[in-house]
Length: 111
Image 1 (cartoon, helix red, strand yellow):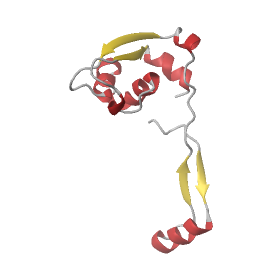
Image 2: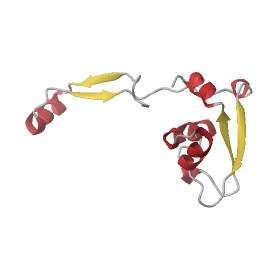
Image 3: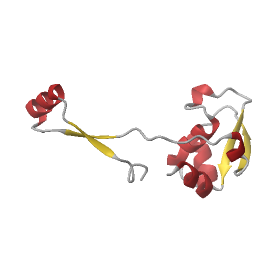
Image 4: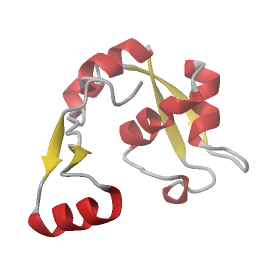
């Protein structure tokens, strides 16, 4: 799972502590830290092979991930690699690059 290796921290801020104790009987709340991914530099990008895909009507990141990685939950890798976080950021006719093999990009970003 995507969050298995992610670090967590305890939210024990007084305001939240009172709220969660009152509403849920909790002393604290565990949060996932925001992951910090290193985006590949131009030189690093030369170490990856990519499949070029021209964005057309009906395309979605999860569909591309299912097609090329056999796992639709890895859509975010394609979005991250292209620096376009959502489909809204991709226009019809844009070139989208799918980094392959999957293991290379996963290793690089520490996933």
